[in-house]
Image (cartoon, rainbow, N blue to C red; front, side):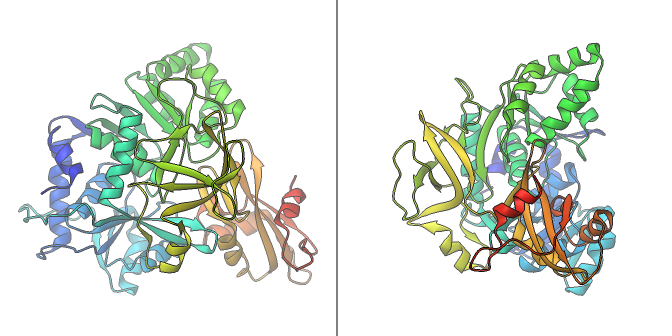
Length: 494
C-alpha cells in the first residue's frame, strides 16, 4: 500500500505539481523521479527502516523529489537549512544520527567533508538516477517521517519527530479549514527546513493536487512580478515578508501599484503566521491588497492549532479558534483549567501532535501533561477567540518567523576570546517581531565592533540568530540570587 500522499498524487498524474522559474513538472514527473531517488537510496536493500537521510537542496523540484524519495524508501527525512553554517549543519547531522547525506552540488564543498569525517554515505543530486525502479517498501503511516529541529529553552535545538500519520492529520486539518482544491496555485517563498514551508504550503498543495510555484530564494520584486501575473489563488508568508513587500509597493509607480493590487485581489486567501502580525502591517496590507490577512497559530511540535476563519469575521490581534481535529485548552501554573478571560498556557492534543523529541525522552516527558502538549505560550480567550500574549520563557526569541534560543546563542558567544559574559534578548521590532540583541561584558580592556562581532558569529550561527545590535557593558544586571534579569537587559536597548 502506498503512503496517502503518493496515492493522492497518482490521481493528478498529468497536472502540474511544481513549477519553477525554469520549467513545470507534473505529478507524474514527481512520482517517477521520487521512485528513482528511492531506488538509489535503497541501494539494493529492501527498506531503509527509518534510517535518517539528511538533505541540503535549494527550493525547487529536486528538493521535493528527494523528500518524497526518502519517504518512499522507508527513511526519515531530515531537511537541512541552506543558510546554516557548518557547525549547525554538523549538529543536525550528528544529532539525528543520519546515515546518508544528499546534497545539491552547490553544497558539496561543505557536506562531502562532513560525510567523510563521520563515515556517512554521500549522494549528489547531479548523479545519474537509476533507470530500473526497485520494488519500493510498504511504508505504514505510523512510521516516523520527518525530523525538524527547533530551538528549545534548554539551548541546543531539539529534533521534533513526526510520523506520516501526524503529517496527514496536520495537512487534512488545514485542507479542510482553508478549502484547498486541485485548482489552487500557491507561490512558495518560505524556508524548506521549517514546518510553515514544508507542511502549510508544500505538502498541503501537493495533497490537494494543486500547483506549487517554488522560488529558489525570496526576492520582493520577483514575488510582486509573480503576483501581478494574476493566476495565484493563495499566498502565505511571515510578517517580515509582508513588511518587505509593502516597502516595494510604496516605491512603485501608480500604474505598477494598480497591477500589484489587482494581482492580490484575484487571490482567494492570504495568510500570515510564524510570528505576531503588527496591526499597522495588517492594515497597510489590507489597503494594498484588499485582503484582511488570516492569522493562525502553530508550532513545529503540533502543526497548526488555531486559525481565524476562512469565511466569517477575522479579528486583528487574534488567532481564532481550534482547527479541525485539534483540541486546545488553557491552564494555570498548577495545570488547572482557567476561566474565560483569564490568561493561561496553551496546551494542545490531537492526531497532528508530534510523537517525541529525537532520542531525548526526558525532554519529551517534560513537554506533555496528561497527554496534552505544553506549548510554553500564554494566551487568553476573549469572545471565543484566542489572543496570544507571548512566550512563558524569556529565553525564546521570535525573529522573522524563526524561534531561536537565547541560551544557545549565549553558549556560542561565550566561546569568543574577547567576551567574558553575555546576555542575549529579544527587543520588539516592527519588521522582525523581535531583533536579537546581545549585552556583552568584555575581557579586560578589549574592544569589539559590531561588524567584527557579526563576521565572527556568522561562521558559527545561522544568520537569523546573529545579534543585530550589541551593547558593551561593565556588568550585567542581576537579581538578589545572582541571576541575570533579562527584562532589565531589554530596557538597555530601548
